[in-house]
Image 1 (cartoon, rainbow, N blue to C red):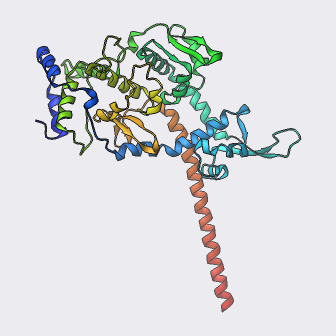
Image 2: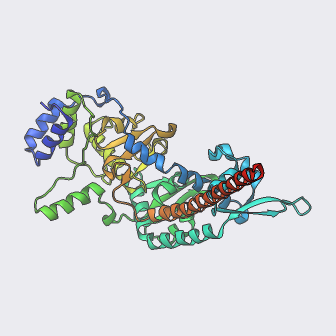
Length: 402
C-alpha cells in the first residue's frame, strides 16, 4: 500500500482523528508482537558529524574539569600526564597545552616543602573569566534547571531518583556541579533528599507535583499548533525517515497503526499497562523523547539511559526502540558508544532549537577558538620568519658565489 517512506508519512499526516471503533479494530488485527519487528540499522552521516564536531570541545572540557576538581584547582603536570588514558588524551599534556593556548597556565611550585620545584597547571585568567560567565548563565536559567529536575522526578516510577545517578547525568541536562548542595535546598516545596547520604544510598524525592511541569514537549507542540491553526491537533510524534531509508511493508503497517494509538504522556501513571503492549511501547518512546528533549544536545549515550531502566520502567532490550523507531530517533555508534539522538532536533548536523544553557558551551568554545586563532597566527608568523631567513641565506649564498 505504501511504496516509499514518504508516502507513509503523507498518509499519516492525512489521518487526523480516526473513528474509535475503527481504531480498536485495526489494533486488534494489525499489531504483531514487538519482539518480532526488525529494522536494519543504517548510518546517518550528518548526525554522526554532529557528535564528531563536539569531540575536541569535550576533550578540552574533560581536561579542565580534571584540573578544577583538584584541591586548590591546581595539579602537577606529571600527575595529569599519568591520567591521559582515563581522559582519552592521545597526546602529551605539554602538546595539549600547545594546541590549546590560553586555557591553562603553567608555573613552578613544590609538591612538598623540601622537594624540588616542578611544573604545575592552573586555570588561566581567560578560563576564570569563563567560569564567572558560567555562574551567571546558571543563575539566569535557575527556573529552567528546577523545572528539568522536577520533570525527571515526575516521570520516574516512585517520583524519586538516586543521587548518584543524577550526579552522573548532570552535564547531559545542564545541571550545576553543586546543584544538590546549593540548588535543591532552595526549593523545599519541590525537593527533599532521603536515605543515607554517607552510605551512597541517598535519593532525591519529589515533594510537590507542579502541573505546569506535567506537559511534555509533544503536548505543548500540539497545543501551539491548535492555537495557530484553530484545529484541535492530537499530540503525536514527528515521524521523519531519513532520505533513502526503506521500511519493510509489515513494519510500515505496524508504524502506521502504532502512531494512530493515543499519545501517552510520560508524566502519566502507567502501572496498569502491560510491559510488552503497544501502548507501553508508545509510553516508553514518549519518555525517551522527553528525556532527549530535556537534554542539552538532544542526545544521550545509551549506557547512561540504561542506568534509569528501573526508575522509568524500561525493558531489558530498551535500546532496540531507537532502531525500531528510526523516524523518531537515530542510534549513533560514533566513537564506539551507542548514543540515542532525537531526529527532529537536528537539521543536518546542527541543532535547530538550542537550550538556553547551551550558551555555556558556546562561551567555552569561543574561549578555545580564541586560543586556536592565536596559535594559527603565531605559526604563520613563525613560517614567515623561516621564509625570510631562507631567502636571506639564499641571497647571501649567491652573493658569496659572485
